Length: 260
Image (cartoon, rainbow, N blue to C red; front, side):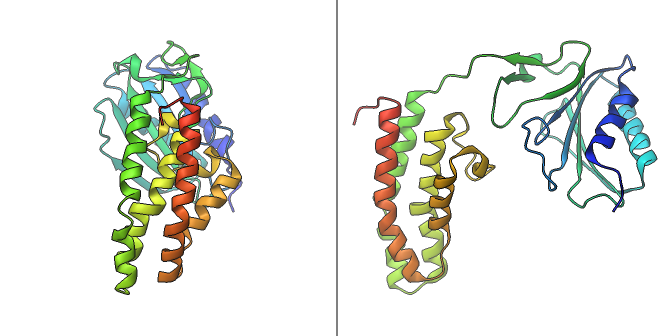
């Protein structure tokens, strides 16, 4: 295994760009910014550069990475945002997990789009340098809209009133259909409720990083509902899910002082 590690890569990019007038900021997102780095973590690198300098910045970055080792993987994607450009790299001989997710944003990108909430559990920058005050850190958490919480609870209740859709396929001995409907009408709604209870701002994330976002005992509960081995499993857990669902809804209604 190559001796090149994530810090070597991070520092090499810093040394390459910190003195360049065309490069305004350099920060990390993902595991580095959330203090969640382990041996499986990739590197999420961001640069803010002068408009028109994006291709040159990528070329210089590739040149610097190639000094560390041969690039055995490069892939460019068309980012949905017109001001963000994204490439993936890997250096030969480094861990297979050490993919470099390299984003460059044009300096003219709306600064309101580069705002982060202090302590955010999903998106937060580890700033390496910021010469032009590109990044804004806000102290106050965004407001949780009660109407959104109420809508999610109503949606979950509606799904739980349709458990017959699951059981009819159990009775027909149709495992694929029973399994898919079990996920839709019994298991997935529990994830929605867990998200509303613990991470309402990110109610839509489903399983993404959920093991880091909710208590371990709640993770174990979800594991129980998603470990299915038979039609009888589906029958039993569909029924048990009703009790878990009602308990979660009751807790959420208490947290947000919702009218029962």
